[in-house]
Image 1 (cartoon, rainbow, N blue to C red):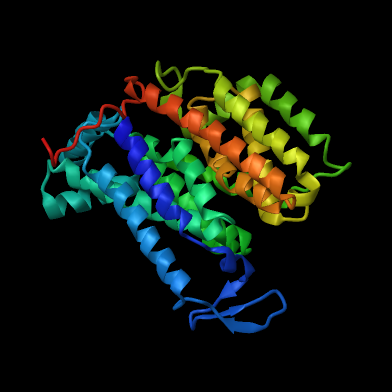
Image 2 (cartoon, rainbow, N blue to C red):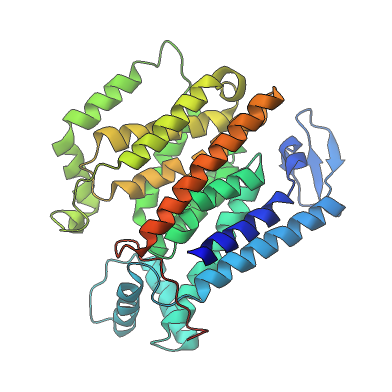
Length: 380
């Protein structure tokens, strides 16, 4: 556990030196290196500036630390050996697997290069792209990189990628795709999500969910949607489950997947973020398309966690939504003009999430999570 805390501290320290504030002033960056402000005036980006060089060095450093920790692990993650067995089944092609065709193709390609039962390189390749897309996506979308990165680590998103590697690869692609949504390049956004679906089909929920979150504006004409959505989720349990099982028939009746669990911790987190957001809604969120989207995503997650516990593997849907918290909170804090309040909220949120991070790591010894103790094939 101490190693995880130390490496997180090292990465957050590197993230502190990343300054992407000038990027928020850019609207479009052309291939020639020219950028255009809101008024359409072209000017050069600071790609060769000292700060951009620092940014690149720090981002590469963060990537190398996270990638190395993930790629060098062995037996870490609650389904590590299950995946190893599935890799063998994919090679033999004589046993059915629930893995999507895209992931099977990737596994076969790596096996073709390194050998049939070389499972470590497969985990390493997946870790490479997972870390790459997470870091690039956070850098491209966040208004305050170091805070977003800290929240990303403290929420456990990175460490949970040691398990369910297909899902977290897809979640990383979702984070990367956000910049296309907010620049209104909807076709590239959808294409990335469709591509990701070849690795984990649950990601398709992102297209309707994110578009609704992006275009939904709250006013007197739309407030009624909240109680109606809550009622539908609560009372339409049977038809919703039937619809889910059309796409995921193997979930139905599964002793592990088809289990209703109330996540009080996630309900509390979503509720706390909602309350904080409402305090600064008019100042920080209203009129800001990106902030409004993340606000709506958090609200959707809260409704699902509260009224749809019967959905199998609900967390896989909700994580696509609550990942927006790592961008929403920094955006709100950055908008606070009074310095004393900005410091208060920054310190309070940092302490709260650090405490959550410690509790998460303590639970890491639980076989359900199994990210601790850490073992590496390199030092064995």
